[in-house]
Image 1 (cartoon, helix red, strand yellow):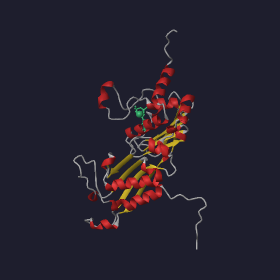
Image 2 (cartoon, rainbow, N blue to C red; image 1 turned 135 degrees about the vertical axis):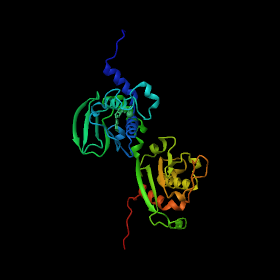
Image 3 (spheres, rainbow, N blue to C red; image 1 turned 90 degrees about the vertical axis):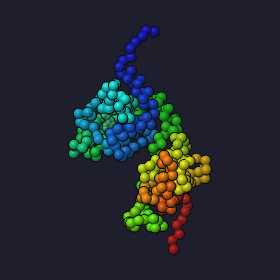
Image 4 (spheres, protein in one colour; image 1 turned 45 degrees about the vertical axis):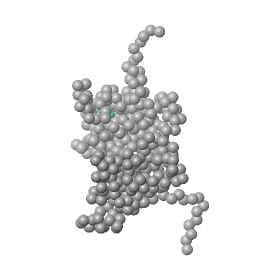
Length: 321
Ligand code: ADP
Ligand code: MG
């Protein structure tokens, strides 16, 4: 066999197939781009385990009109200008490969974006070589939405592999998010120095959907319980204080019922309550906090009610008198 140099397009396609081997790689790359663009809020939508559509919408800086045509070209990045600058890179991305690889692995790549200088957004369709084939203006809030359709459409083996692996079903499509706000429980009125009536407890949560696949939400990541209190991450589960342990157990029981003893489902919680009611000084490194569980119970109960409504049993008849 004689040696041949592969055509550029083949070299590049082989490269992409190493970057994007599964739908979750696409989600990760797009979320990192959103974070790099300074997003505060990111919406991820996954249809059919990511094979049909993945969309990631952010409220970041957006992409300038002059930069947009190059977004999905190979080795094109705004984050690194020279090899020497590498140690100073503070962004997730810098290789300028992700969007190009995604374009090559997808049936369609559509990016819609608007910067703060513009009144309307712009939408760009990219072909598999990362070149713009179509563009136009459209309504879009400040930021960027990347839509990837028909992932692995032309890579039959990889597509089949994704379908056959159960966990190819992205975790994100089994989760739901909530924000629940309740007034502070009466009992703590005595704690209050200024007696403000507007004191509230807020819980932001990402929990399994009531009908989520139990295997996906209990096996996908090894550490599945993430809790923040007033912005402070408390990652070590065995250091949760009594109140947090109780909250986690309530959520676990509500979702898993009898199976709850053995498994932890994915749970992400951010609990916000008046700082004066939170003791953060339990440990020198401040990885534990304590608060009176009664403060947050009404909020937790409301959260559970919304996330896991009691099942309507078939054949149940409501009696009205
Ligand atoms: P990298 O992140 O390594 O630079 P990518 O291929 O992921 O490479 O992205 C290429 C470029 O496209 C980025 O450097 C950035 O300038 C721009 N970009 C990608 N996604 C976004 C986004 N969500 N918001 C703003 N700009 C983006
Ligand atoms: Mg990137």
